[in-house]
Length: 169
Image 1 (cartoon, rainbow, N blue to C red):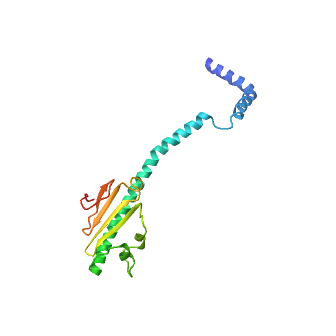
Image 2: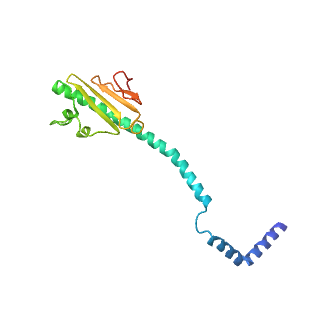
Image 3: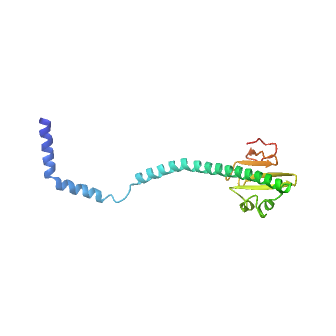
């Protein structure tokens, strides 16, 4: 009971001096127009930590999407070569042969290089073809080189161009 009475007395004395207390709080808030240097430094540090986590993941996902798109492009080329061979009894030796016909075997986007960060090269003769896909910039647009031929098997090599001796996917 004594504690309650003391608390009430303190509240009453604060209420009588509330004008001075409010003025003191307003004066303190008036001097604080912006952020302190410490608050800004903490904000920058948190932002840097978030960036250090997010940027490598973004770059890694970009590399992976380029590689997946290139593998799909190689599958499309293999399918187009099979259809071209069925129709003409020979393999196409250039992308123009596959794209620039009345009913194209590939869309004309295969004529523009690089595609999805990779440069794709079609070579060969009428009874055999090879396709090599290399990143436009190693380590930036891709980490693996790819190779396929008339067998339809897609092969890869890490950090170097792939060839017929590289392991299959």
